Every structure is written in C-alpha cells, then in structure tokens.
Image (cartoon, rainbow, N blue to C red; front, side):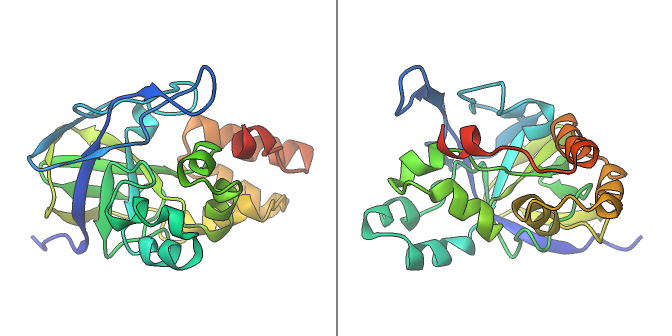
Length: 232
C-alpha cells in the first residue's frame, strides 16, 4: 500500500479557556497557550480548549482551527509595531494548530488528514470577526484578514486521537481538489453571486452555515451584510 503523502507539519498545538473579552457581555478563548504534550482531539475539539460564543464558534464543524505559520511573516511586515508581541509566536489568531508547509491554497474542502492518531476532515474556511480588530488594536483587522484570504480554516474530527507538535499532516483523501479554501474565501470576499459558480459550490459537502450563506446568495442574487461580523 502506498503511504499517504505528507502535505504539512504541526508547528504547535494550542488551547485556551474562555474569558470576558473587550466589550460588555463578550467572551472569547482567542488567547491560547502552546501545549508541549500530546493533546486529545475529539468531536468537539481539543481537550482543554473552549469557545466564548457557541452561536458562531465551536461545534463539530469547527472543532479545530488551523492557521498557516507562513502568514505571520506577512502580518509582521504590514501591521503596526504594537502587534509585534502577538506575532512573535503561534497563537495570535486563536488557532489550535499552527501549520508549516500548508496554507489556504493547499487545503481543500473535504480533505481528510491524518495527524497523529486522529483523522480529521476540512469543513470550511474561517470568516474573521471583530475580535481580531480588538486583539490587534487595528480597527479593520478582520477585514484585512478576510480580503487577504489569510484567514485559516476549520477541521471536524472523524476519528478521535492524539496529536502534538512535530506530527506530520498526511493526506488521506482529497475529493474536491478544485475547491481550495483560498478559492472559497475569495468567492466570499469578492461578493460573487454568479449562479453557475454558486451551483458548483452548493454541490460541495458544506457545513450548514456555509450552505445557508451560499444558498441565500443564489436565491437573492446579492451578498450578505458583513457589518455585524466585522465590526461588532
């Protein structure tokens, strides 16, 4: 049997508890700490990890958040100096897995990855929210992340297991090679409402939230309002 290709590597595994955040009534677990031992991955995410607002974060389709370590070089170049401490190590974007050798262009919807003893499936890209604005003290940070397609993505856990820094990311299946995370994020950011294109997207194994998003665009012929998500 041919060994599955190695497409990436885990630089760091991070988890964090939810705490009151920057605005009245808000909570967040965006501030995560690096774990130096194997961490269990289950249906609702990594052991020891929490989400501040379960209406829009967490759940089986957003169990594990990934972010490309390579993006940090870009953000260190374009952001003000006050952001430098956040960008010195993984975790600035609230990610659970900081990944080397992988970004949104090399990760596709429906991918199945073996990491350690866990089997995971790529469910959707991240749609950044206002909490990034407050974390980085940059008023339009969420919009910058969205427009750049350097947003990260989510995995669901198909087979629970343990993973840790240094583990290889092994590609077990890629049923939709034409639909990278970057392509879908660009479609969202460009406010595309092309019916033929949206029909292709709606045939993908999207989680309910993205199914609703693209179905609404298809039906209404216009993109959704981002104000609440991007500005709070």
